[in-house]
Length: 139
Image 1 (cartoon, rainbow, N blue to C red):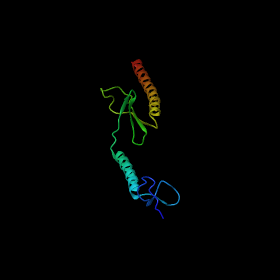
Image 2 (image 1 turned 180 degrees about the vertical axis):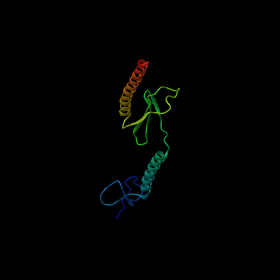
Image 3 (image 1 turned 90 degrees about the vertical axis):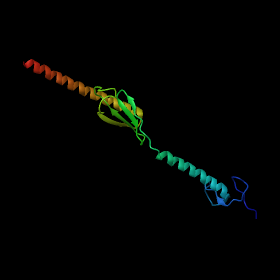
Image 4 (image 1 turned 90 degrees about the horizontal axis):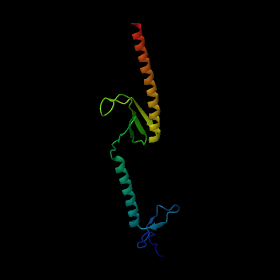
């Protein structure tokens, strides 16, 4: 009875079933080729784990509405800043944090919120001006 040769190298006798072929467990590859397959798989897993364990520093992108960044969960976070500029870095603190699934969705939400905040701010300024005119009129 002749022994089957390895299906990968064709030199050594087949002693291990090929894990990539479903069905009956028939010895199709030699232990050396099996070892090389496992070694290659292990390298892929170790490289993936190393990439996942690297600390990812958030990159903040400045936009006219504030700052945006991508969270580790692949969601986008935006920090809306509508305030008078106190220095070159902008306002002291953002007025709102907004979240979006994509960068475009986040920027759209930030723009909508900025419009709403500006309307509110305009209403507050009008009210303050009316109060001032009313106070001056009473004198």
